[in-house]
Length: 173
Image (cartoon, rainbow, N blue to C red; front, side, top):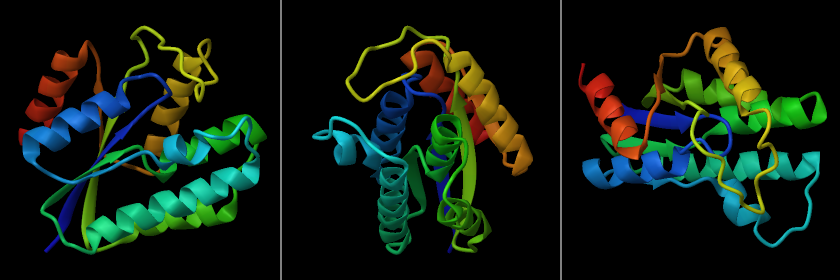
């Protein structure tokens, strides 16, 4: 049995967590939370090596839920987010992250669909957020990376209810 993995992705403060939580509750499906939030909450700063640790923990959480073979699983971000952020912040990315991401894409036990949250919603300040001014540039990087990996994706726009309904409609078609 193949699990349908629904990944909510996009720049920071683009509504990923809200959408992933709504969909998880609606479908009564497990949701892999964004590890970076819990990992960084008590840190004043982070290094590139922290991104690798976050990626490993994110991968492990996803693998643990997949091992239970749910019909559907939501991901509030995945390794793509960490990959893009590492490339933007540090100019490159640890090879382990690329390899693990490609392994996720190649696994027979899951099919992945990406929903890319548009960044045209108000910025919400948060101690873990860093880029209020270049979210549109980051959004374009997400499109570029999704195309590079030839991934199926749908752009979601509007307010929380509109985004939720857009994903439901796209998913059901």
